[in-house]
Length: 196
Image (spheres, rainbow, N blue to C red):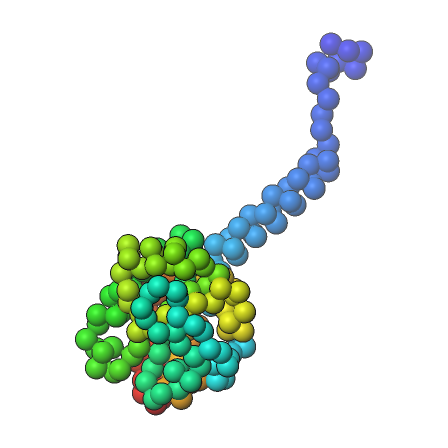
């Protein structure tokens, strides 16, 4: 014991803990807001506007034609899916694209799925499609990434619903899931079909 009768332990004034408590509260608030933010609701300046002008060549060795902005204004609803073989979430969403490509309701509506292969090696793209299946009506190679930038893509995967007149109706950021397919993508496709 020291002369004052204490055991030698220093007491930390509560004011010294105040910065730590404030930091912890702000970090907790940030985590809660981050967790509730729907990353698939990122805004797009292109909604309601014509698709960017582009022409994409075919992916080398695929035997499928590339596509252009003119192909998206032929009177039918189109889905433009930006994907890459190096993208893990693209693998996760691919079964849902395959499901869409076989959906009789979408076939009756004339919906076509276009694949925009983003910054990918043709050999890897071919291997990806061979392994996971081909849901696309046509696929174009965006080797430089310029077309993806023109579409305002934040990354891959992203999927756009395009009305028959070539107007972008909806943008889905991130992989398609069963919930997003049912709650967001299908209603957007149906609304775009009615707007023809």
